Image 1 (cartoon, rainbow, N blue to C red):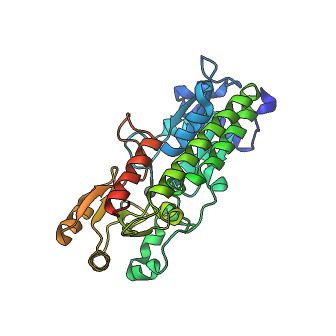
Image 2 (cartoon, protein in one colour):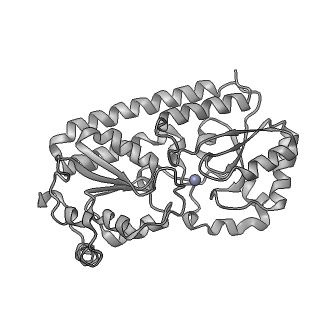
Length: 322
Ligand SMILES: [Zn+2]
């Protein structure tokens, strides 16, 4: 087992931390072998839902996947308990996205888990701000100081399904390194998942090909990659962080744009307050609808693919696509 674990200089510091915290899960970590759970499964920790979904699908029944973002919680600026920080050290694989959740970045840096997949390194992140948008914001430039936005890169890559297979492949590679006996399974699972992402991309491309409008007004500016992929224009009311309050000037700008372009729908999301969208829509006499950034599940009966399909239907209605 030791040959499959890359030890880092941080490891001893982790052990000290573990002893100090004396959290039960650490006992598991301290004596973990290549097979982590009692039932021989690998312990995998994902930082938030889309990465958790990928880890679950690729790992199948050979892994046990936990998430650092509780179900129904909003992952931006998540806080971690000492037990969660300890679980980062104990996990055999941590799948996270650097630059998105500062507390997770700190925990990974502190704990030095044996194996890590950083989605930011494989998902080809970029800035997706629409042309002209950043200078329209003008006096709201302090938004750029949001904790997860230091790099200026948009974190929401998972809303473009074509950016997901690279993450699935990276997870398969990491799991195969830890558990070589499962390598064929992991690669097959990643390939099957990649096929589903491809089918979703096809559905979006076809469903959004012919629409009367292409402007999507959202509260939380999470749909930049989606807009870029399917030739839509995202207009965010509140910026990339869902907690940011829009300025009166920004609300007036968006209102003018809604009237000028005949926008019918202002989208809000499930994990953040709908108040801004509802107030603005009511003032302008347009509809509201849900567009889910798929950052976390609020309903166990849903998953990434069912939510993505519901988002597509909502977009097709709002944009009058044929
Ligand atoms: Zn977000």
